[in-house]
Figure 1 (cartoon, one colour):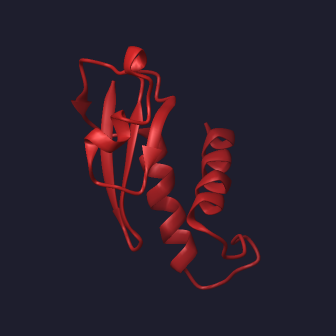
Figure 2 (spheres, rainbow, N blue to C red):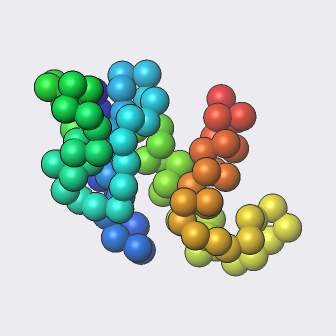
Length: 95
């Protein structure tokens, strides 16, 4: 399992993913225990490494796009989660 916290203009965003970069838990916090607490006790991993996740790259790209000047390709501003989903979809399509 991999955990990563990304500093964003809205505060820290932490992502827990499996070794295939599927997000298991995430949220607007820098507190690793809060992220783990979102999982059922039976599903909480024991071996977690700090590392880089694909989803964190999408979050960072989303904020970079959100603060970039408007262009026809940029999504209209919304909440950070909708921006994250838009960018994650675009990231997956580009792979």
